Amino acid sequence: MRVIVTRPEPECSRWVAEMTSQDISAVALPLIEIVSIPFAFDARQNYDAFVFVSRSAVDGFLKVVSKDALQAKRCLTSGLGTRAALIQYGLQADLIDAPDAASTQFDSEALWQLSSKRDWSGKRVLIVRGANNLGEQEGRPWLADQLIVAGAIVDFVAVYERRLPVLPDASREILQNPREGDVWLFSSSQSIEHLKLLVPTRGWKTSRAIATHERIFISAMGAGFGEVKITRPVLTDVLATLKAY
Figure 1 (cartoon, rainbow, N blue to C red):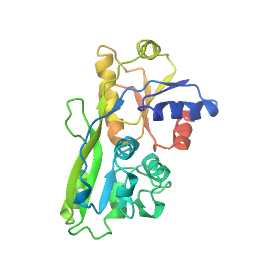
Figure 2: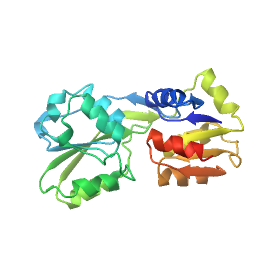
Figure 3: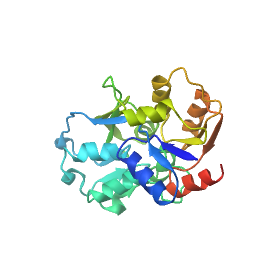
Figure 4: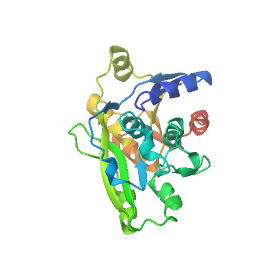
């Protein structure tokens, strides 16, 4: 059995290294390319809170904006990796709202269970996210809608683009000649959409996959994968799911 990890870099190579250290055969096939893009940030807006949708959002924003802009500000994120990135940049852990490691989900709904208890009336919130390859901001509006209903004033900024990757020869070899025992690891529905674009004529009826959220599971089943299991996006859970195959 070989695991094909499809996360964007650098997370893709990090997950492969961690799996390899656990004696799991794994290869990197990042099906989303993250590219930083120019953006404008007006510190005079004096935001009360910042929402970061991913580690890429943290990196893209704080490579341009001083972390001083976030000092003593509430930060919200739904992912453990994104929370860790904020802490690595020097943000205070007690000022970060994020589902804890024992959470059954790492998404906007789980995050809002924590953050909905705060008073958002009149608070200014900036959501830092990505854009598609047309430069259009993308992402689920659900959390923004909850904040607005709670009285917050919400702005958005895109600091990176998620693009269809240009694959090197080694990655194309994995894509064109998958093995019978391969298990595809998907952490984004967009990875599945890109996979369909890269090999549009291939059927996946005999292929296996792991999805890290129910929405991704639905996308993988819709793409035709014959067997898909759901797990939390945590390495220990992924390894346990792999052992069940």
